[in-house]
Amino acid sequence: MTSDQRLLLVHAHPDDETINNGATMARYVAEGRGVTVVTCTAGEMGEVLVPDLEHLAYDRDGGLGERRKGEIAEAMAALGVTDHRWLGGFGRFHDSGMAWHADGHAVAGDFVPDNGFWHADLLEAADELVRIIRDVRPQVLVTYDEFGGYGHPDHIQAHRVATYATALAAVAAYKRDLGEPHDVAKVYWCAMSENRMRDSLRRMRESGDTTSFEGMDPDGDLGPFVTADDLISARVDGQAYAARKMDALKLHRTQVDPDGPFFAGAESGHAFWGDEYYVLAKGDRGPVGEDGFEADLFAGL
Image (tube, rainbow, N blue to C red; front, side, top):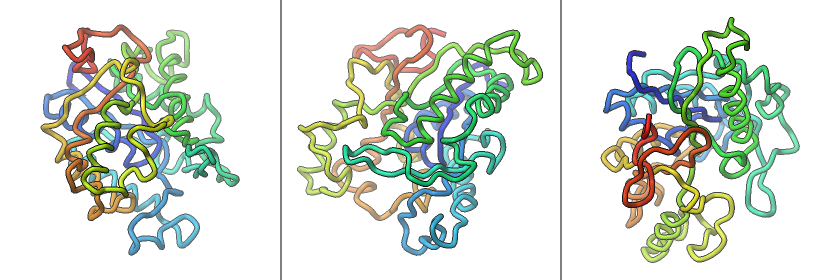
């Protein structure tokens, strides 16, 4: 990778990277910045939303992980990302599955596969990422917050692994066989703007869309899915790349319904997902705009 500015993103399953950061990645690739995506599991236990592919589900014929391996390859190509890696190699860590808590957030399920990422040794998994950090040498790393956004055990584990690996990678005395030490200057957590979500939900409901984000009240408690705007550090304007992001998301065919209301209507995915928000977890905040946010994850570097 020859770019002077390099971004490393750490995600749990295929499609997480596109949903959270697709516009950011497409924009930075277009601007000549380096973008590396690390996926921790193949999402073998994900929900299959397309009827003609339901046989791939973990509790049926299986094979979803191999299918999603191809889907993320196509999605990365659509976004222009040429450096995608599996943590420890494809299949090293297995999707852990999840269940829904009565309070509406995800939790670990009763059954977790023997090699489920949720049960992975933290140091073992972190070392795999240390090797990548020292190889790529990014200035900026993006992952989830400590709750994994909505409580999914693999998201939480990805946060833990990324946080630990970032610290270890910078220590000069730590496992030099994993590469020369490197200190990541800025770490961000993915975020969903509370104000933006409430405004969008209102427009969706007014347009008659009661399916997208079903059960979420624009004037009610939105739970852990959103972040208060006064806690958000950066907003990357990717509106020029929103269509490319949505095209990439459609390539995760087992996970999305391309004919569903999410991709159409007054507040469609194109309108909603072009702006991507981040909380600064490590490093110094750079200059901000009139909206109070950094406009670039590399701001101040």
